[in-house]
Image (cartoon, rainbow, N blue to C red; front, side, top):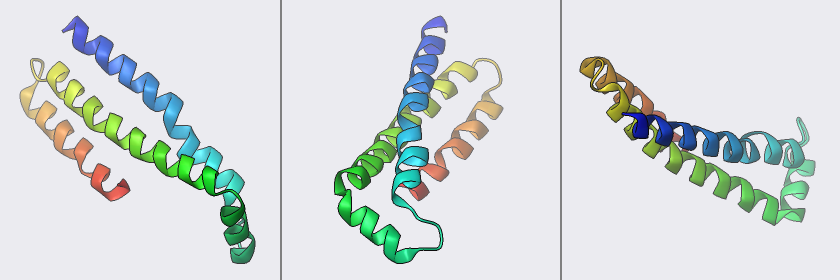
Length: 98
């Protein structure tokens, strides 16, 4: 049980370090609100930035899958029905983001 909690904490830390790249940093540099041409030019000029944002999101969502599974195993002995519900509700948004 203690090992599962450590795994969950480590995965949460990875998510906290990786997710802001694709969710906050890349959009703040590439997207110009209300200016489609400027946004397209920014994306064209920083292709590596767009690729880094996509990679960040893919890695982030992959970690989320493992995080949900670790949390399920952690919470299953406490309340199995709630753990199953958390598992289902946690996995639903992942394919949407992918």
